[in-house]
Length: 186
Image (cartoon, rainbow, N blue to C red; front, top):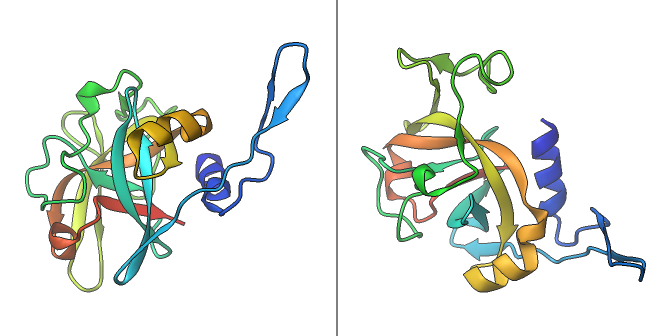
C-alpha cells in the first residue's frame, strides 16, 4: 500500500517536496514537478515508464480499480494499444517476476492472487459488464512522465519507485478494444 500512496502523491498536478537532493557544498534543491494528466474521450490517462531501460505505457486513471496493470509480452489475447509494443519484462534489468513465497512470504495481492503450478502469483479481475484480464505479478521501477520519451527520462526519472503491477497475459471484452495500454488505480 505504501508504494501506491507514493504514486498517488505523484499524480497530483504539483509534487510537493518529495525529496531533496544534495548539490555538493551548495545546499539542497527542492524537487517540484508538474505532472501531465491527459484527456481522451471518456477518460483521463497518464504516461508511465517502466523498467531499466524504461518502456512507455499509457494508462487510464481508474478510480474503481485496485491495481496497476497493462499487457506484457507475450500477451496471448490483447488488443492493439497506444504503445507500439507491449511491455517486455525480459528487456528490463530491474524487473522481477514474483513467485509464490518471495514477497516476502506470499503473493503481494494475497487476497486475490493464486499460486499457479509454475509457482507464479496470478490474478484475474472481472468487471460487471463482462470484461476481464489475467496477469502475473511483477515488480519494477515505475514513474509518471510525459508522452515525450527524452523529456520524461530527463525530467521525471528521478521519481522512479519500485511498484508491483499486473503483467497482463489475457484480456477479454472492452480491454481488448480500448486505446490505452492498461489502467492505473487511484
